[in-house]
Image (cartoon, rainbow, N blue to C red; front, side, top):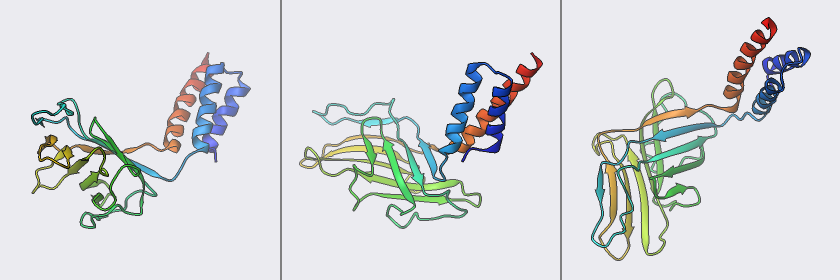
Length: 210
């Protein structure tokens, strides 16, 4: 449903015969507010890898310009003091996810469900403060690939990626330790429409004075 604020600005712009670009922005705000969902998306941005291991004969898959990044879409915002760190599973609250190490992308269609998990913990404000995420691919081309990011102090705040051939111990490996990434909440469409409404209101006031 479109917000009354957006509809009001849109109607005022039409009444004042506002320029077409203002009407286009208002229409976009209407579409955004109408398509708003209750789902919440959390994004993770890690730091670039500082350690790279390329065994002899390896094609050198990882570089120090790569890092772990990803998003998790939840059915609703995580509440205060949420904790499933020890569950070692992917919660039913997770609708979708996508993580990449700069070389391979892991999502719900490209993981081994028996070995992968997403563990999260929030503080009293519902902000993610601890995490342990391990995503492992199925076996393909006689190899297994994985991404692991954790805030565990005992493990050293690791973001790591590996390509592990099944028939050899030589694995391509990249990691950064003791330098945890950051989490953020992606703005919902309703939030974006409110921001656009504010810009439209400012443009409308200037148009009236002109």
